[in-house]
Amino acid sequence: MKNSSTAPGSLSAKQVADYYQNGYLVVRGLIDPETVEFAKKSIDDYIIEHPTEVSYEPEILKDRAPESMSVEERLMSVRGFHQKATKDERFAHLVKYQPLAEALVSFLGDDIKVVQDMALIKPPHVGSEKPTHQDAAYFELEPFDQVMGTWWALDAATVENGCMFVWPGTHRLPVVEHLDQEGSPHKVINPEFIDPSQQVALPMNPGDVLFFSSRIFHFTPPNKSDHRRRSLQVHYGSAHCRVIPGMKARKYTLVHGKSQPHGF
Image (tube, rainbow, N blue to C red; front, side):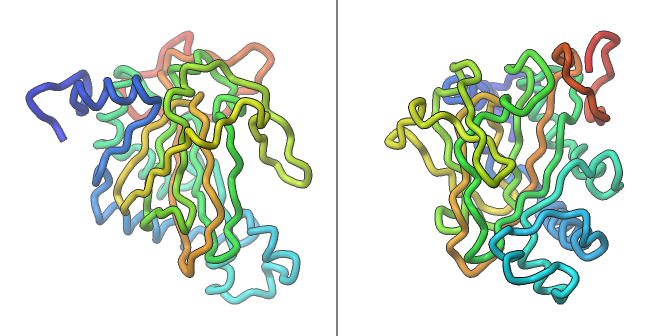
């Protein structure tokens, strides 16, 4: 991944410039095939081992209870789970993946911690939309420009099965108004801020990683295909970030460098 024109970390100066210009960057093949397979197996094994600690697609639960499902049915019904890196050694290992950590140095400096980790899955045919939002609307840390997301494609991510869509340049905006979505835990950006003509689809292959600003507008559409779409989404922050006054801190995993006395 290195070339003759490099920035701090492992990314090229052009890659870093593209990220700051657009608010996102796709790095192809950053996760090696063995780690991709390990991540997929870790997700599936966790679902099998902890059927009550995962979220199911609401559409499926209208007709079935998880305890009545076979293992295969359960695997094809789960929407995801989160915050396992501090509890499960498999995900603790994954969030510390060194080629990714070295790439993050280009944006966050040497001292980096995990903010949150999530397995995000879209079951075939019924995997629902994640509406348009900014991740910073959910976060307890500041400054927002020192917190960023990484989205790891584990299966091929296509427009049909729910790949990521982004609005280039919206990372320069503040956190805009988000509205609660009735019957859902999701927040959605007030539609008056959204221009659908500016959205860009980001199909990705297994092993590709999307780096994206915590303020960029993004969403994933429903899965209309015959196949699951599995991914990991891990947010990282500079260890110099601070918890916003009044917000509750969580456990944070150090992945590069060292902790800072006044950081999170």
